[in-house]
Image 1 (cartoon, helix red, strand yellow):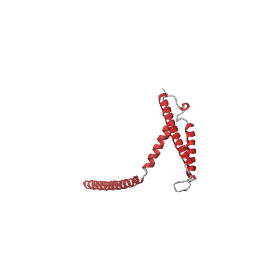
Image 2 (cartoon, one colour; image 1 turned 30 degrees about the horizontal axis):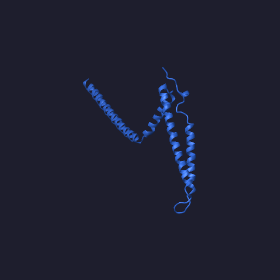
Image 3 (cartoon, helix red, strand yellow; image 1 turned 60 degrees about the horizontal axis):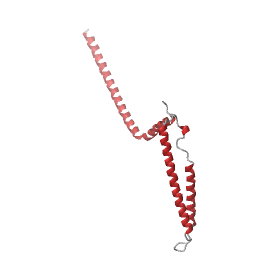
Length: 161
């Protein structure tokens, strides 16, 4: 009786050793595949364009923020309107200065003799250029004076309480 029992135990031990070897082999192959996948992920991570992901993320945030209504208090609205009026005054002042300068240059060119020191005529291109600049500045003045404010009072959302 002892003999078959010993054989049975030896068979169980042999089977357990075989299972242990199989488990160790599976663990080693799993570790190797994990290591290989980690290396591939590292290589792919280097090539991934993070700037594109960040731009998509920022665009999503901007779209989300723009979809929400703007809540502006009366004080903020008056400050924005005052800043807009100040910018408009500065632009008008600058444009008027530039227009005055161009007009002065045109008058000087017209008053100056048609000849330079060498006896050659002053090119008409200079006068044409100055007249074009004058026209552009006058158009800018019209654009600035017709400019609408940043936030129209009708568009402002009342403050929610």
